Amino acid sequence: MLSVVPTPVTVRAPSKVNLHLAVGDLREDGYHELRTVFQALSLSDEVSVVPADALSVQVRGADAALVPADSTNLAWRAAELVAARAGREPAVAIMIDKGIPVAGGMAGGSADAAATLVALDALWHLGLGRDELDELAAELGSDVPFCLHGGIAIGTGRGEHLVPVLSRHTFHWVLALAKDGLSTPVVFRELDRLRAEGNPRRVDGTDELLHALAGGDPHVLAPLLGNDLQAAALSLNPALRRTLRAGVEAGALAGIVSGSGPTCAFLCADEDAAVTVSAELAGAGVCRTVRVASGPVHGARVVGASTP
Ligand SMILES: C[C@@](CO)(OP(=O)(O)O)[C@H](O)COP(=O)(O)OP(=O)(O)OC[C@H]1O[C@@H](n2ccc(N)nc2=O)[C@H](O)[C@@H]1O
Ligand SMILES: Nc1ncnc2c1ncn2[C@@H]1O[C@H](COP(=O)(O)OP(=O)(O)O)[C@@H](O)[C@H]1O
Image 1 (cartoon, rainbow, N blue to C red):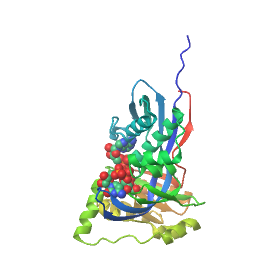
Image 2 (cartoon, rainbow, N blue to C red):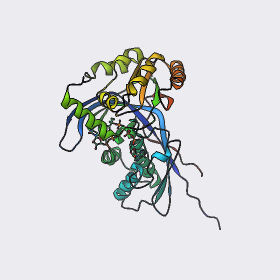
Image 3 (tube, rainbow, N blue to C red):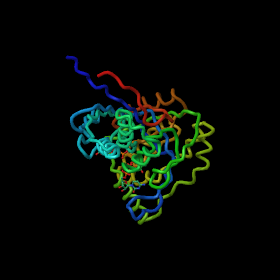
């Protein structure tokens, strides 16, 4: 008798860089009020789901050993959440192909959570609407809604309220991945400590930055990039100063810490410049490895229902 092998559904989800990240006050719920401009980058994860007897997570890729393969994995939590919403058992095997650095400030776990929501919506033919997916995403983490949407967006609240920003231009980046990750809550706490002690400089408004995005000239955009968490990430990992300097010396237009770090993101003039900067940075010995990426790219999206 022929047995039917289930076909996996595969979803690709992007990483992100915060072009602008203004951190406001600490709220009573333990989160900080944010205003941020996200851009989705081509460095991405792929998540495949297939029916199974019980829920499981497997992770592949260079950083796989750093990712929990249990119920603390954000993809696992996303599967439980969609299953509860659909009133069914989360009986799926989840395979994560990791391209996004772990604990790097590039929303890797959030990308996997967003990808799992989209994959299970497709696998189980749930027909969840945008609003429902957004609501589930926001329950999973502050960055998950953006990983669903992709593109460029302004995020407010704890980052989950999104307004899309239209841009017809592609920007080219080099990412310097660090040896060790930084914990997001620890970086926010360090910023609170620095602010209690003194008055670290805060980023300006976003008007000029949004204008520069519309114009598409990376030379205009470069000096407008800013991140309030950068001072905290540098305080916890002072070696990042050297990485930031090396990227600019290698020819990048500007370098910033991505989100809570420690990945450093360098904006380059064009694709050729990004390749040159990445080669120089790789040889400078200031980071674990380098990647070239571009953005904006789309959010979590089905890329295949392939035969295994
Ligand atoms: C800083 C940012 C910038 O985009 O991203 P990363 O650099 O970590 O990727 C985000 O705000 C991170 O979002 P995400 O990683 O989803 O964080 P969550 O799981 O929601 O929160 C983890 C912890 O970070 C702190 N947190 C997060 C968001 C926020 N607006 N204020 C906070 O203080 C809280 O201590 C919270 O418990
Ligand atoms: N699917 C996942 N991918 C990566 N990390 C995950 C995942 N699920 C849970 N984690 C945990 O979340 C932590 C933060 O990871 P990540 O989302 O990559 O970084 P960041 O919050 O800096 O963007 C990791 O150290 C890991 O323990």
